[in-house]
Image (cartoon, rainbow, N blue to C red; front, top):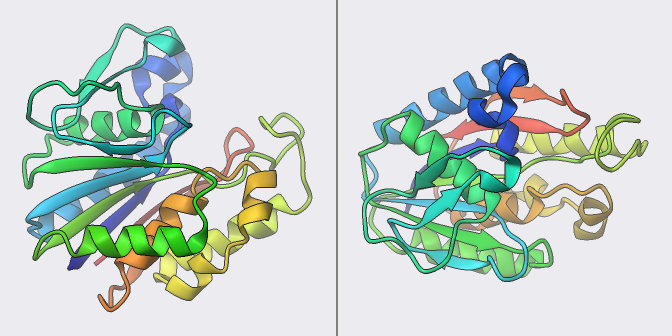
Amino acid sequence: MLVAAAVCPCPPLLVPDVAAGAARELAAARTACSDALALLAASRPDRLYVVGPAAEGARGPFPAGSAGSFAGFGVDLSVRLGDGPAGERPLPASLAVAAWLLEHTDWADAPVEALGVGESLEPAGCVATGRGLAAAAERVALLVMGDGSACRTLKAPGYLDERAAAFDAEAARALGTADLDGLLALDEKLAYELKAAGRAPWQVLAGAAQGADLEGRLLYEDAPYGVGYFVAAWA
C-alpha cells in the first residue's frame, strides 16, 4: 500500500556539477526535493520505487544497484541507485537525477528499485502500473520524477505555447492537493504537444494512490528555464 510519495522535477541541471555556474538558480528546488525525501523517510516504507520518464530502450524496471552517468552532459559524474550489483542497463536521465537526489540525502531507509515509463503510456496503463507498485509491499513509498510543460517562454526548449501556463497550473494544483482525478484528467495529447514529461509518471502516482487517502502539499513551483518544475509531498 502506498504510504507516501515525493514528486520532483528531473532536469540534469538539478545536479550542481551539471549546472556549474547556474547551480544557484535551482537551489530552492533542490532544498524542496530534500524536504520531500525527508517526509518519505519519515513514513518508514518497506520499499521505495522511483518512477520517471524514459525514452524507448530505457523503459521498464531497474533493480537496486543500477548505475547512471552525467557524462552525456559534459560532467564526469556517476551515480548508483541504492545498494546492489551493477545493473546491465544504464539509468535514463530522469532516474539518474533521482539517484543523485537519494545519494545527496543519504537515503538508507528502504530498498530502492526504479521504473522508466514512456510518454506514450496511456492513463489506464499508468493506473495499472501504479496499482502494481502499491501492491508490491505492505508500506510502499514513491519518488516520482517529471517536469511540466517545456513551452512557457520564447526561450523554452519547446518555444512559447499559450496553453502551457494553464496546463502547468492545473498540474501544480493537482499535485499539491493529491487530486487523483485531476492528475488523471491531464490530457495525454496536450501533454505531448507541450513536452510535459511528467504526465505519465504523475498518472502512475495517481494509480498507486487510489484508496490510500493521502494528503498533498506543494513545496515548490517555478519555470526558471521556461519549463514547469514542481515539488510536492504526499503523506
